[in-house]
Amino acid sequence: MRAQPLTDFEVAVLEWIAAGSGDSALREQLVLAQVTERKYTVKGCYSTLLVAIDTPVSTATYASHGPLSGPCFESKAVEHGGGTLLWFKAGRADCLEIYAHGDYFPADHSELGEFRLSSGA
Image (tube, rainbow, N blue to C red):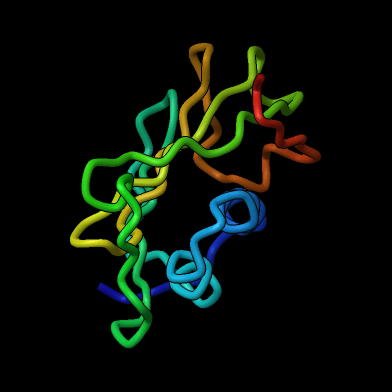
């Protein structure tokens, strides 16, 4: 499958995860990550990631027993906001799961408009 750039929303989520993880291997993986496929479920999206093979493998616990919780988000396009999870395979970021707390998540991430990320705590 042909790789494509991340959406602005995916970039923001992955930057948030990388900044908060304290995991230098994960940060290196996510800097140049691309998407090979997006599967929409009406209530969310699974973005399959492609990371450079020459980046270090994460040895953090979540990298083998994930997922790693990402930020919650708010957007006028998603009534009750949502959350994110980063899944791994063999120590490499593999899939970004985005889910709405309500019944709808737009198939085009640009429809989110302005959004706010938070720890949800």
